[in-house]
Amino acid sequence: MNRFDVNRLVRKNVSGLHPYTSARDDFSGEASVWLDANESPYPSGYNRYPDPWQRELKKVVSAVKGVPEEKLFIGNGSDEVLDLLFRAFCEPRLDNVVTIRPGYGMYQVLADVNDVQCRTADLNPDFSLDPEKVLSLTDDHTRLILLCSPNNPTGNALGPEAIEIILKNTGALVVVDEAYSDFSDKPGWLGKLSLFPNLVVVQTLSKAWGMAALRLGLGFAGEEIIRILNRIKPPYNVNLLSQQEAIKQLKQVQKTKEQIVLILQEKEEMRQALETMPGVKKVFPSDANFLLVEMKNATAVYEKLLREGIVVRNRSGILHCASCLRITIGTPEENERLLSELKNVLQQLQAWTPETTLIE
Ligand SMILES: *Cc1c(COP(=O)(O)O)cnc(C)c1O
Image 1 (cartoon, rainbow, N blue to C red):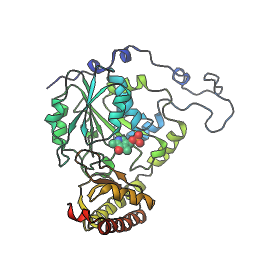
Image 2: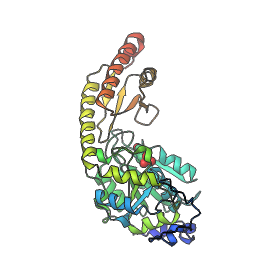
Image 3: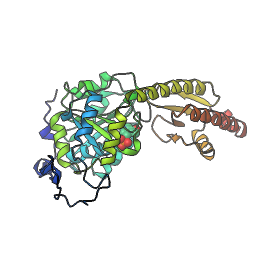
């Protein structure tokens, strides 16, 4: 087992730099005259800069998630949290990251933007994770291992034993992106933070919590890692209105839980309906709020659905996902619409293109 040392991983320029200190870092007490930040003095509800450390929001998130505030980072969407991990730990053109395929496309984009090599380990055809394959792609310059569980676009949670093998056998940070964990009945990784110093858990308020437009991503890790992210983040990365609104929304735990239950019920109904539909070949197991569905001629189905005003995600070009659509679970009415249009479309395709009945 490699000994974990975060100081070995952090980029030299990051450990050496002097972070920007905002006016509100220098003074954050009570005052009646604020002439320190060149703001407009005229009240609009948002004429003052927001809290750079999102203290009030962090208290609420910390209580909801059961993780102390010192182990929490809040970003402008998870995309910002992930980008900051690249910028803090990956030396451009020298270091590398390892991720899985099929997986979330944003990791490759972030690697490209940061000029960092991105190596991909193929999942097994049943979308399970082979830890040895991931570890075999790592070397002394691997800084991040990016795993998404439940995985997008495949929908399955990755095996905890496999992730644990990776955590125990690398000196790199292992980032588990849990954007969909709110929909899964399998335990996530927040409870394991103190066991694995190289574990970083990323979550989002964009999915189950219904705040995609507010752009709020959560990073959970050991205090040292959080401190490093805090050194390089833009000072006011989470705006005031997002902080205020999230505090309100996070108090609606019951409503969110009920919505999750409804989405999961709808998911099972949609699975059953899809499985009996001629033209649907396979509905993959899902721990998320979407289904990956293999069907005859997915691209033609996708285009016909579009013409009816129904947008799903065509994942046909991706490894192990040939002729697959990824369908998000919507409201009962939306799901009904999707199913009835899909039935029509598959029937049309069946009737009009004789070769689809010959080529299985
Ligand atoms: C949707 C999603 C996110 C969320 O990104 P935000 O920037 O927080 O909206 C993160 N990771 C994965 C895998 C996702 O599918």
